Length: 475
Image 1: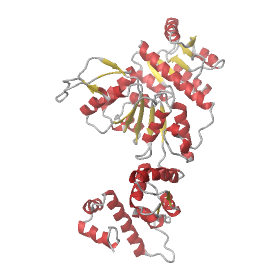
Image 2: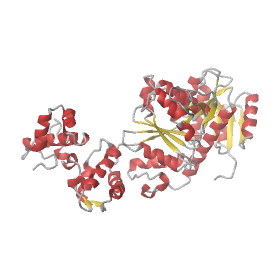
Image 3: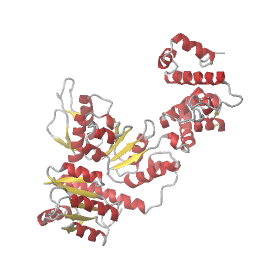
Image 4: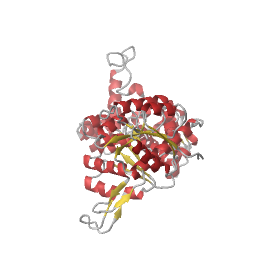
């Protein structure tokens, strides 16, 4: 831990505001440098290092548009891109503050400010700034196969190295993080890694499916309720926010959250307080928010389906996870990681995956990402009679191989190579076999359901399933 007190630079063209801020923040143990103009900010930044900067967006020469303040923000970023900047705006200038956050500010405060909220914001940004500088001075993380410190996150592909570095940098801070990526790509594992390397690791990490519950139920689950708040509320119940006190809340699928709950969540992030459903007492909320989505939140914001101010609150730091097909180096690592776990659970002496099976795993595109790979390994362990996972224990659509799949490579016409030896009948059978096997697997072996997925009659499906020996016992 650093031994020197954190140093702040604050800027405002009103001396009484500067003095009030200096006294408030000095009482929290900060060293304060106070200046009255954008030019003085630039000069101060050239003379020493700061842990955070608090600047006003409106100066005497430009009291409405904030152009001078936004230009100062740009200059600060050019001088030190890692330096956290908090901006202040006059009451009612939220749009200007949102614009500043779009341009890189970490947070904003409205005048007249709430002391507790301002102190909490500065504390968070100082911790974030110090964590980033500390990480910059450390050697980059080695391969995460030994990464218990990263919550068991397994990654080797070059596309994942920036992710690991961001986790190390921002994990020790309280900065809110937004994780984006396709379903099944490992967003929850990244959230666990962030929690694991944070000072909150000894406290709970609570996962909430933000789009998986009805509005009333979701509010009760998140904030709790008082006795008698609704029919059936026989006792007072703590919500997940309260259970996660001094810990982390992982809000999965936050893009599905409805407008009313977006407002309620925004209030918690702004004030760090909430009320239980049916209650009047405000409860403290010392939590860190990690959110995840497979949707394009910027598009939802432009369409008016997601609040812009909430987006910038949760997206202090963004981590994007590439799909598994774009980081194939991770496929063998992940497969070998899942194997002993399922072998132990099922009590089977399976110790490895054959080279041929690994080749099939590596050639597949994994539309279901890491989650699909995990399911495939679990299935293979359940079916494999020998100590080594062989290709026969993998699903039929993986064993078909890229050349036999309907999405296999072709020429510029979209057709496969029609050179000598091309067998149209065999290719047609491969097409049928691939989709029949895939539907059967996703239907859990229920042929009626698989037939419905493919728009076939049950009688036709049963005929082809028997023809291509897709059912156990077919000869």
